Length: 555
Image (cartoon, helix red, strand yellow):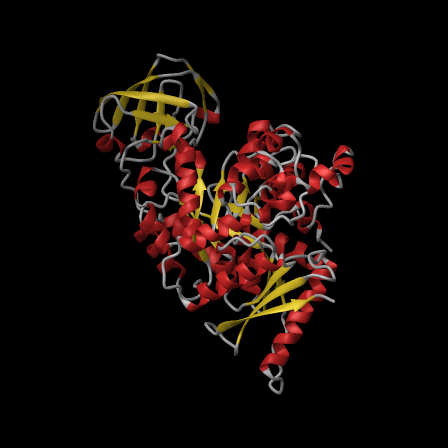
């Protein structure tokens, strides 16, 4: 079976110097030191974090020689491409730490993606382990270039004139002097002096003249152009429909294949989410809709989008072209924090370990980027080309696992809980009140885990909102819920397929499920004898009846 993603068994050997330090007097005296000592001497802030309320004191005491004692709680999303589509590769990605499979519908046919779905499910059947969720990432209202002649690559020179055509007759006649773009209204939306970016901004064109069916421009930099490259129009209100006819077909395909979540591209308003939900219909009501924020309109309308969506993805690729790149980190921190405050999951994506597409090791900047996303509050981090087409997909997931594991150990949990609780509007609804009380109890006890019995996963989501240090062991009889809870930081699913016998008392059934969870997670290394777990349950079967917290010693 697969269990490596939960523990630290994949972490590389740490330096022996830490063993000499761990039991030293200086380690035990950490909290009594002067500020000067805190800065100049190694400390165990990762282990003593719950006793510290000062962020600066906590950061000054971080220590590279100390083992992180927590289990990785941030989920890892992997894009599946031709290199990783086989059952064997999907199994290896699961071993390395993958929690959610992503299918990018900007590429590949329905048959290709059905193979990904089938292989993922077969991998889970052949090699038992934690449930794996499947996400469909829509193409969205993208703008792309046409084909170059014979699909060959052309060199572009800075300063050279270039013609942008919207005449379909030029679709497959692209050269270094002519580029077809499939957005016919572009001639009505851009003006002299505007910029057009192609291929993730690698090619920049300044508009000089605008005519009915073409635009005359100047290349601002050299580069290469080939077929079907993405186009971005910064500061232009694009009037493409939020859901294209192809998107509609893809969404219905997702419903038919029973995917767990939709990553909806280029969401610009709350109405876009409503339209997608309408297309999914009753049969797809269980599918979570994650809004990808990729342009100015999405940022400007963020609050109304967040209200309608089940979660958000900070899609930094197109966003970093649509807005100035130096503003991306501001947008990222804003979106992650607002999602944290309302208790909705947030994914940080794009170029997180980009260099590992071709190299076995990430850059130092990439490692810091992933760690900072985790410390900012991201529930999930995502790999794109690194696993879809890269040379080192397994290594990329393993590196992502280790970074998340270390970053989570450097978080100051108790002050974070206090701040989240203080900023939650009062009065709390009953489930939020129960969720915050469970986290408070777990922090006070230094509990090994919170066990939550849930039908829809909503109680688990709200417990995750308050960011406990310990894992949230999510016990459910819903197979859909067991996969979907991977969206929430710290939630680890246990799917129990057997229903309660008619002649069994409710509390007896609850106790049996809690005991099964304890034994199961003992085997996985989450729980050890001598500690405590906090159990959250309802008083009867069904949705909306969660109202009880219990503290249980582990024998």
